[in-house]
Image (tube, rainbow, N blue to C red; front, side, top):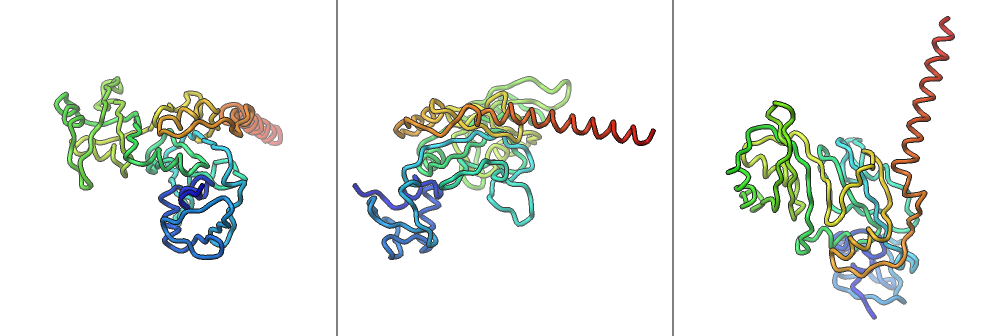
Length: 288
């Protein structure tokens, strides 16, 4: 059975299917010693190389893994930044084969749920517009928001790159007596700064934005900002089912590994705090 080359590369965790298509067009992929062309099909016996590096059978048959990351503001979703800003990939664990692929992006001033996987096909389907995967955001806006405004935002507004709308809008509490108001909004696309731009079309300023759900998965309440957790098999298969992929039977999740975010991290923080206290006491004693 042959499969499309870009799909095989995506399944091997090299990158998303769209990215692999670009790499093939750029001549970075070879099959059996010849530069590959877009649309080529390969079999398990074919020798595939990317930038001269072989894609092993072990890579092609790896388990599907998914990380949930609670992104802080101030981090960017690129692998490298010429300006030296911190990237979301810097905090992630090492992976033996393939690489972590970001499922969608969040801009530098947006925090919250960000998913990573080593399965390029899963990433591609979750990001592709035709699969209509809901994203939910908690948003704090500054300015008066009327019921007519909310109806307009659900009906649709015209942005510079086309029409956009919120599928759902839930009003939450105000911040004390200020003009700040909280809403939960749901959108089925991932265009650049789309949530902010929809609100700004009504001359309302977004002062805080956090993603709280992607598809069927909600941000875990105990996951600290800047920490990640590896998802267990039921969560992975729930995500795969939402985009019509067959379930996995195994994953590399380990319970102790999954506790890294809110157990080991909290222990590390306590250890740092104790060290600071001991250092401070030692400094005070030396002064005496």
